[in-house]
Image: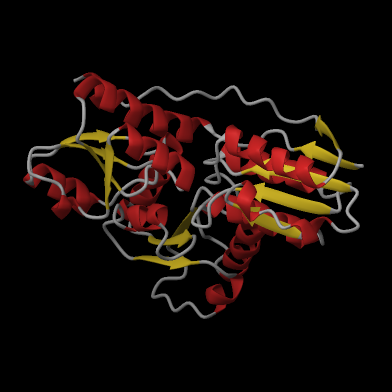
Length: 308
């Protein structure tokens, strides 16, 4: 018999709940078509469910008819996107996670103080692109400590950094340590911008890693926070796999395994995780328990623009 230990916390965070509920209620109140710029959150099952309800997902505002109702995703958008939406007379409901909005505010504030801004994050990720587009002055994206030492700057004493909210704390710590070593006066707090949900889920995987032989992370391939959870397990020497759903589970992974840790990224539905549990039961008798962990009580209000 295998034991499966469920991580706590796991799955949806407050920002994801807020974003999904925003789209659902918008569809109910206004009826389709409701256009959503980019995937509202990075999970295939969530997107398919909302599409079935009447959401139309687009990658560019140019795909949306003028004057249409439009929802911005939880990852945030650049200033130029907001300006384009105004010029096209779109009725916008902004579902940007409040914690991402906080990073936008900090990055802009640093820039307006005349500081060069560093964004620690993954180039091309929608959240990073949105933050980049909120900074009026010099700004660059770094994702590794080695990039810090290759950085060329005009005023080393006038710099600041913010971080993508869904990073691995291990990676973020390496980069911020390098920044502080090379630029002792740089402004920014090491883990302040990584969201509470990302930190809590990564901490849970760290604790799990002390007692498991295998880690399964439920989440889609394009989910940054889900990928980071898998990396945390791997960093601790545990065979770790990202699975979109039960169909991704390979029976050969389970050979010789006695204890499995099972968690889900912040955009992964609990029912998908339960489906993975069901698949494990097909391969072996299992005993399931939930670890002791952080209780999450954070709730975000829905966007005020929903009620206008």
